[in-house]
Image (cartoon, rainbow, N blue to C red; front, side, top):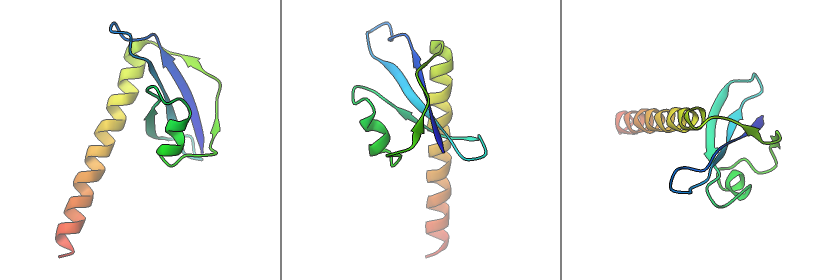
Length: 90
């Protein structure tokens, strides 16, 4: 696994826009971890402690937001699937 560290300029209100795209061993992006104000501790909180990481890569705000939105969409789909599996097991 690999954490690709991306960063865009701060938002218009000054909020940081940095995070890690998490890639599996085949190079598929499987998750996004927003850095927020916690720095690399965000990776540990998300269960990726000790994962290899790239140096910071500057990206546009739109690229950052696309990565964030895609990860949120994926998490929602996984939660939906999990609820369906849980309810069908009852």
